[in-house]
Amino acid sequence: MDMPLILIRDMDAAYQHQVVLSGVSLSVHDRDFIGIVGPNGGGKTTLLKIILGLLKPLKGTIEYTIDRSEIGYLPQGNQVDESFPITVREVVASGLEHRQKMGRRTTPSENQKVGSILEKVGLETLQHRSIGELSGGELQRTMLARAIVSSPRLLVLDEPDTHVDNRFEMELYGLLKELNEAMTILLVSHDIGTISPYIKTIACVNRNLHYHSSNEISEEQLKVYNCPIEIITHGTVPHRVMKEHNH
Amino acid sequence: MDFLQLFKYGFIQNAFLAAILMSVTCGIIGTYIVSRRMVFISGGITHASFGGVGIGFFFGFPPLAGAALFAVLAALTTENLTRRKVMRNDSIIAIMWSLGMALGIIFIYLTPGYAPNLMSLLFGSIITVTKTDLLLMFILAVAVSAFFTILYKPILYVAFDEQFAKTRGIPVMLVNYLLIILVALTIVLSIRIAGIILVLSVLTIPQNIANLFTNRFDRIMIGSIILGFIASIMGLVISYYLDIPSGATIIFCLVVMYIAARFVKVVTFEGGNQKQNRVDK
Image (cartoon, rainbow over all chains, first blue to last red; front, side, top):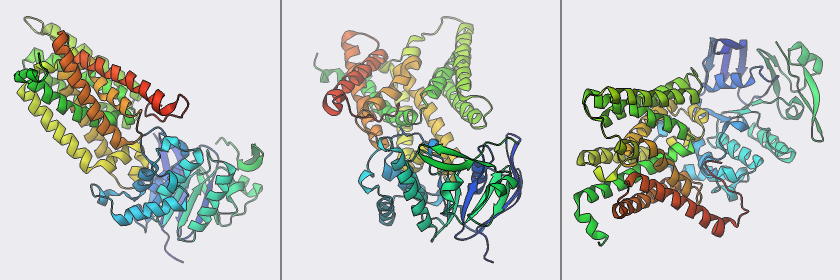
């Protein structure tokens, strides 16, 4: 079997001594498309932060066979200040910045990369707009373009479908499916019904992690994995989402 | 008296140079402050510096040196405690704010002899700027301009989304600490001109005027430099002819410019209906 891009072994994570993840092990391989599901507060975002190096594990190890700069990241929609004076193009270009390049001018090839990604996500006409002038879907496309502009080997997405309409949601997952031909994807979502046609495997996270090597999962299996679901409706579309669950 | 004849006076020449240098530093640093919603933190740093002024008077060293020390310490403490989530950010700022003012008042009260003239420190006086002040302001203007020119992109990206910048390997903590030190030093050197009470205005009003017409960080910086300079010169000239305090006159000019700019924006750009995208939205 090929070397994993990331290998997590028996990892615990905590915020101010409150353990959020316990005994988590996961190996992420090339071209995987893992849907990370679980109830709110179950530790999905914490797991991503550990993988991204934003949080140190309390216990256990995490090994990388890729460079950290080869990881693209799309944060949750509410993380950025939409009134910050920055253009779409500047946001996307920030995905190419890294420590070794600090203080250097943007090269023509980098400009070209930014241009082609903007075209790919359909934002070339909005590139000089401030992000405050964008709709929720346009902003999310901007953030996705920032995550993929560096052609990462691993793409990490934290609930990319929040604050977007159904049409963009479908477009987004179609694009992710296409991107998965060239890169590995870790996708956090609370809506397993929507993501299951696109993902390859599932990681149920609710303090512990249970790996499920298929994109199909039954309600019974989710219960066994301590990730119970319930049916809720957003507008007219029914979703299978993770049930709120107390430890 | 002819306007140009004013420049035969040494103190007017100094004031003119001070206006240029303050416009540059406050235009750049103020854009960072407003964009990152750090106006309240800056208020805390400004008032904390008063503690250093009082200690300076008491121990007989230059009050602005004491103010600089207190401002930098307050800035670093606020940044550090906020980052470590020891206390709520607004509570830390409130404590720094009031502690600085309290220490300043206590030490000035304890200083033997006449109470020092606090008016120019509280409300500023561009016409009392010395050659030493100008030299310090020049060094700071060069440092701030160089820092923002060389590291413009990392600064912009860290200010916009710290977490993402961290994932790209940008040294976010280092950038933040260097910037908060530059904010503190900019505030202290601007106190000579605008005073402790009014200095926040020169760090926020030009940016808000520029932001009415552009939503780009770099353009807000350049616009703020130009607007800050215009207001400083207008304030200087008006205060000279009317024999009124220069710091307060500069702030008054900035507020009038803001009202005029809003009016122009409504009449010519918005028609009263278009969506606005403002830093302070």
